[in-house]
Image 1 (cartoon, rainbow, N blue to C red):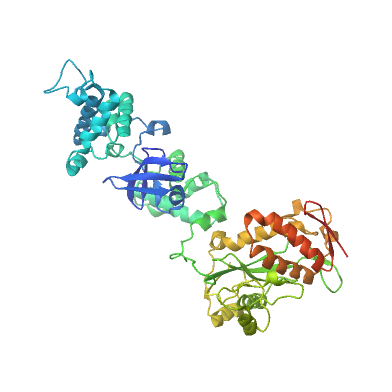
Image 2 (image 1 turned 90 degrees about the horizontal axis):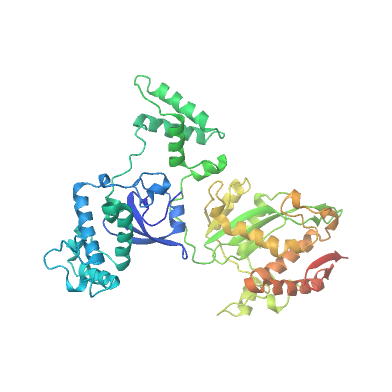
Length: 506
């Protein structure tokens, strides 16, 4: 866990930084390096950066985190002199005298701008800021007096009252923490070896890890006398290096997977198309015997426009042929259906609709179509099938599989399933819920739509609502869609006054 309080330290890409200011209202912190370099970064950037860890240096609030308070012994001789110089400037701004004692004035003290008889504390601090700002930049940096503001003087004064002279010292001047001296190179090697070993095994306790560390040391360094620290030290070090270890084992293994070589910046339609399959959460009736069944929903989504380019309903689990036909649907314009009006036609800017219709051989509905450049899938067997890989090669698609147990690599299509469920499927009879515990008393008996009717319903909803919708208008658009489908679908919709679907009747 990172401590981002002002004054705390962290290491970013091997460079030590100190948190100078925290801005939680906008999710940013300002960091300052040892050489005075400053940068503003977001909290999300630090939380997800693989080479970011807490610094071992003592921070201003170190005593509150169980560490000893800073003392003058934490400063070397040169830094003590710089702290004394800071203290002299601070006392001159506070009292008008660099010694802090009006009975022992220095030559020319007090200066007119620091005379406590004629000036206020605020004016003296502002005069000190102006004086330090007029110094040579290089000289002020060497003395640690560059970038001194009015608030800096107040902060130094508060730390001086709490810690004395060492309160005026920069926290980056303090000596580094001692760490764990009992962790030798041999013990460190054993800890990392056990970490790699337990990463691929089932989850074990820290006691078992301790025994494995002792066993590794005995077997590897049998000709040397290596002292292994106690259990509490090993547990503390393991927690500091690898985290608390409260997550599930398979997610820990997933977190250790190597990152991709770069990332894809999507900036045009068709550049990346994400494919995935889920079980349709609505019971439908098959067309032969009319029995309630569950079907699978393969879906293709354009990552740039977040449009649902194509979908299919399969009575059994989808195959490579189904996914190949899904790619075919992505590349071909969707024909207008008999009950679709002109409002569902695709408006092509700069290109007459008659030209598009002549090219396609039919009127084209309002759904994008293109040749996908890159296809992102998970590691399901259907997506790794040699037939589908050959189809993608012939089409000219780059295959970009997602990492194992990393749903964020194709989060757009994962989120699309949730959007379709909440905006459409939950409104339909036969809805089964997200798991067995939330299932209704008899979803099979509630199922009235056939597979063909469900396919027509989803296609109409995608073209009419999902492709051209605004979040604020989802409710009103859904009511208009229900009214529209009550006329076009062979089954009548019983709708409540607030627009909710009550039931389907033949």
